[in-house]
Image (cartoon, rainbow, N blue to C red; front, side, top):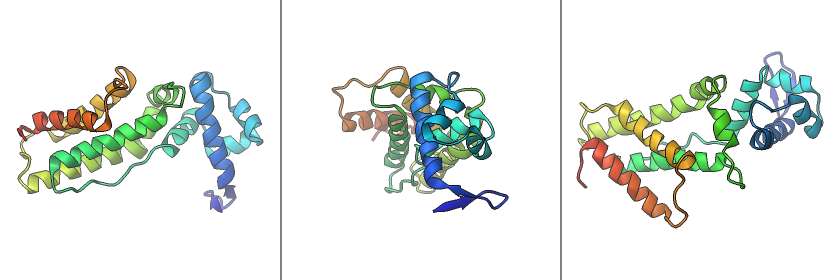
Length: 197
């Protein structure tokens, strides 16, 4: 299966996937700054121009490799705004978990926050996730489960911030179960929306 470039030249999707996987591996091992397009091309078995034709800059290439490894997900609709927001946050958590390699390195997460990479990821992924969060809260307002007077962006940003903080700077203790971690999210959501239970 191939994709077409704007000029109609077909792209090899298998090659594209190999390049993105190799970039993820190299960013984990060497970091964003030390990522060598020449080494990626050599390992994959293509020319540098093949890579630059798809992604004109290193930030675009790294952003594509990160986005290829994460999922926007579906908007949860359990009927309860607390559970929907917990599930929404959990989808973010699972994306961050996938971004960490098996050795526990955070190379992709660090690359995600490079000043040239983050706007690309924001435009193509983070804005979509934020819109989903706002949809959950708007539905909660319609169901009278949350006040329309609350700062909805702050609620979404707080959940995303907790997820990022706990994954990168303060990883969860290995003894905590997913259910226990979700209970932490439930407590936070209830506090943010002013609901006791």
